[in-house]
Length: 266
Image 1 (tube, one colour):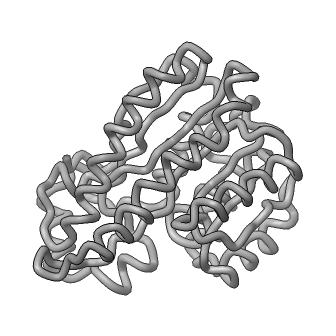
Image 2: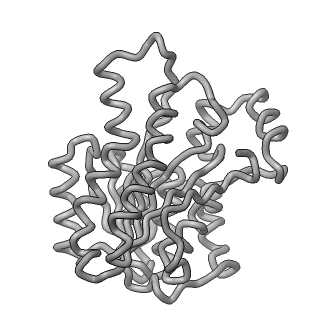
Image 3: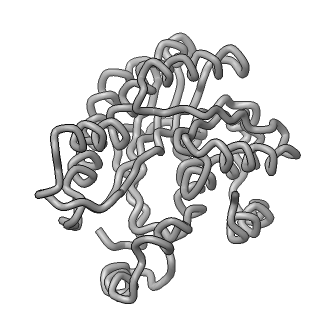
């Protein structure tokens, strides 16, 4: 279920930019039920986009879709395990059948579960890669032919400053997130001739409910205060507003870039 902070954020949309090119635009967001992903869903819906989103948290996903039912277009939610590529492809086909060709893909889903090097097994390694980067490639593969036909489109891959900061205690996650930048640059070159833009949106430490509940400590707060140039909490809506810009026609000549939103930490 959306947090009170997210509810407040929805009422503040009028204070920020409106993008006419996003009205009725078909947008697919992975991992959209909670956290940063939920803010993406809310903000794109507030722009009048036709939003579809996937998540394995079925109850939170459906609750968010219902909560946004008074949007111009009620978001379409599907319970999808993104590590199952056949299921991912089938769900994307369903979205296209229901809403039309996908014009914007936001590859958001990931899991920053902490783990040590000693704990990594071949199975846990494969699972980490599958949830943090593999689905990004296959989701792009599934939407790109329609974008090529339209000779337009925006793919936004979520990265992380974790590897830039040399963070410890989750080596497979850090490895995965560094790979996102390579995927972005490779796809940007391949797809640029078709007018398709591919960028990485790279967050700092975003204060989602999950981060506050599981990982944020007094030591972490001090680290943020020392590291960031702006002494304020980085919130999901800060990422969402940049995603809107990268999806809109306003950013038509921005591609192959790492757009870092971290309060000046990395």
